Length: 158
Image (cartoon, rainbow, N blue to C red; front, side):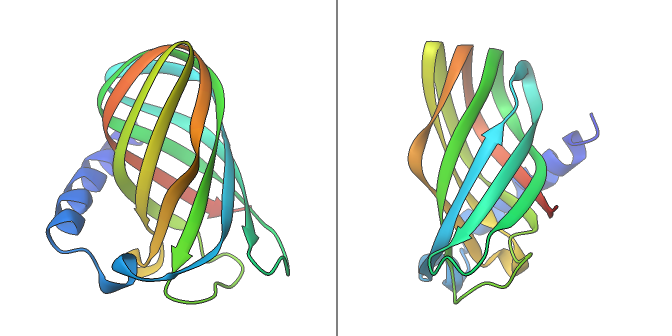
């Protein structure tokens, strides 16, 4: 329930972003890859929240950044899944410093699982909503689940 307020706020942010996306989101350059492991768990009909553990690798491989946080959904989310893994290409107006991915990201989500399943989340957020996370590999997971709606990802540098 702690993340429910964040998810409601994320829904409003998505509506605002869809109506007038920031210029940086429309453009930007690929600055690296974000790979996240997502804990499994139950979808609770209207909302769900799962822990994430992520590593960001810049395109020039100068360093790596470790993030922890949570990903939640607001919308239809029914069922149970084991852990999953997702890889996002990270786009930003320019190069990023360590810790730059910390913040709240919001966007659309969809997934379906019956045994082996797939899903995708396109998310925008971070510093001044200038960072765009686009799925490179479709999320893979095991379980039985169907979900669609708004996703909110919160990252903190670890």
